[in-house]
Every structure is written in C-alpha cells, then in structure tokens.
Length: 330
Image (cartoon, rainbow, N blue to C red):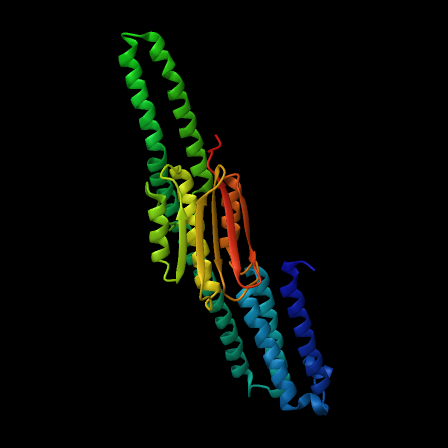
C-alpha cells in the first residue's frame, strides 16, 4: 500500500468500525435516519467501548493533521468528523454532540501544532547546516591561503631570481625553471588536497610548528593524556592540519564515549615516509559505530590522503591509528 493511501485506508477502517458499532448498538435502521426502535447493544453500549471509539477517532485525527498530506488529510478528517457526529446523534442526540466536535477540533489543532513544530525544527536544522557550510567555505579559504601561499611565494622568488640571472647567464636561468615547475606541482597538489580534506568546521588550526600544535591540543582536551610527539619541523602544512584534526576527533570521542577512561595515550611520530599516529584509552570498549559520523569522517579523510586507518576495541579500551604519507599527490 502506498504511503499516500494509508491515511484514507486508516480513516475508512475507523469510520466503518464506528458505524458498525453504532448500528449494532442502536439498530441499523436508526443509523440510516429511519424511524425504528433502538436495540439493546449490551456490551457495545458500555462506557469502555465508547471510550475506545473516541480515543481511536481522536488518535487518527491527530495523526492525519500531523503527518498526512494536505488533500488526503482534509478529506479524511471531514469523513471522521461526519461519522463521529452521526454516531453521536444516533446514540445521544444533542447531548454530547458539541463535546464530540470540540474534541475533534482539539485533536486536529494538536496535530497541526505538532506539524508546525516539526517543520520549524527542520527549518532550524537546515539553517544551522547552511551556516556550517558557509563557515566551512570561509575556513577553506583561509586554509588554502595559508597552505598554498608559501608554495606560490617560492615560485615567485625563483622566477624573479631567474629574470635577474637571465641578463648575464641564460643557461643558468633556464636551469632554475625546474624549481619553478616543482613549486607549481607542489602548490597544485596541496590545493587539491585541501579541497578534498577541508570538511570539518571548528577543526584545530595548524601553525608552522605541528609538534607544538599537538601538545597544545592535548593540554586543552581536558583529559589526562600522556603525549609522545616526535616530528620534524618540515611536515607539509596541508598534512599537519589533517593530523591535528584526527587527534582532535579521537580525543573528542574519548570524552564522549569513554567517560570511565583513566589513561589516554597519544603518540605521533615520523615513520618511513609517513606520519604515524595513535590514540588509545582504557575506557569501556564501545561498538565501532558509537562515534557517530566522527569515525566515518576520519576514515574518509585518511583514505583521501592515501593513508591507512583503523579504529576499534583493544580488549582493554579503544584504539585509533592512522598512517599518513608525507608525499602530496598532485
């Protein structure tokens, strides 16, 4: 059954049930507004049955006003109100008819309020997402400037030097073109890498000293962390930002999902052509999906960099490891 048909099917079922119970309780001739004596409905005329009918009708009316599309909801609600008013008239004449109408209107009003509240919440979420995207674009612009500027600056310096040398030694000036080409290749690779990996608003900002940045990040984490950072000073800045982001997200996951952790160790060092990092804690092991989208984002970031990533329980806690190659792929 299609989604659009469900409101009409539910309404038809409820209306039929209400009409049948009314007919069995009062006589079907009277249900069709024909003069006829009532019948003894027995258990069907008891307050519990009437209460169940009322709750069923009001519940469906609330659901229709809340979830159903406008046109099916209008048709279904009109049918519900008419059948409910008919059943009340047949059973009680004017005694309870105003109460039934007010109850139906209240249920519809509550459903409309729930619909508007849900739509407002969705709009707020969409607005927040758009703000995050705008902030991300600004963050990307800053990072692209900081990372690529030094490559371009180097190219300009070499080009200016080649112009000066060319007046006296053209062969030496031509030899300097190789350095300019290499600088352009590095700049292009760094720019592409930044476009791929700059996706997380609020990530830690990298400076020219990655080791100091990591130690500062650990100090600000609010955790008892033992940090071991052994890195050279010439780690590419486009790679340094990703290293910071991975460590930051790992420590955030420890705070959120390992509140009983008493020992956290962060190790970042230079391996054979790659930066190796690991974050391990002794908190209660949790399922691999407990980090929400954090682990997914980290894994995607590392794979975009051409590296390897692992996150999972160790038996005594939780481990995150990553291997990020130093070479920037153009």
